[in-house]
Length: 316
Image 1 (cartoon, rainbow, N blue to C red):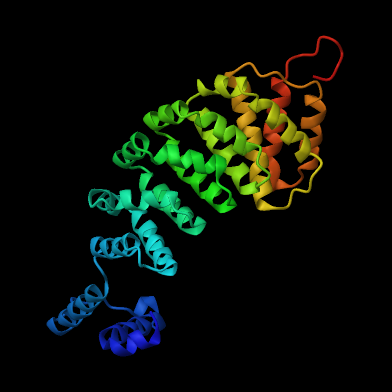
Image 2: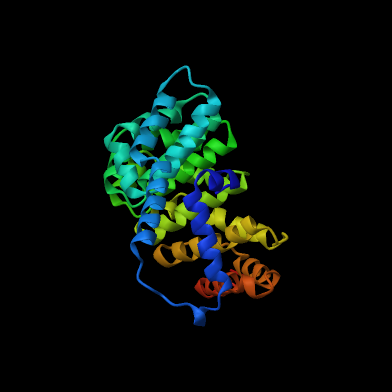
């Protein structure tokens, strides 16, 4: 709270001074006493002042919805409104209120907007609202939302739109059987496999994370991704990792998720290991030094052990 706010609300200033006095006093010298009437009234007035300064979440969301529904609103005002709505949607009760008042439907329409920044923010609203919320997951799965999000992941021209739409898809699909079934029906598997091939690090990382989550939650999906050639992509990525520097945080996360996903696929489906698998995983393991790569080295060793025995003396 700024100094101007403290000066204009003397109760807050008094509370601050009161608390600072207690901080300066040794804890063993403090004596807790019941509040007398004067102190009780003082605190009640302070809390009333705070309540008057705090806007009701439903009123706040309605106000921001009016902004994004108004064609005359500026882009800057719409950006602020969508950011605030996304913040509210992080709370499950407020997300439900947003849905019940028809506001989520208004925000979802913005994923078709021509402006990439507003599209991205609409995706953030969806990503926030669907988490741990079965009712909204069902809405997003049974309407145009999931289909349009997958189209953005696959074809959007702006990198941030693809990343944010994939975030929304991931939040929607992970841990939700009905949404996963719809995702498969909409050919979401191929969309994510294509995004896995993207040169955009964030998009590749989120694709890996989603694939890994799907395969862990639904092992039957491993055979599907195996038949689509995902393990071969992952083997190629591991070979590349072994020749690269491992200092960037995003890169580090990609290595671990790649190895975990490959391990999950190898356990639940018949993965064909390339002939140079031993050399590749050994080289990668040796290149990952230090404690922070301990888990990555463990998965390299596990994959080496899962490698089928060679029958021709060639490294397999």
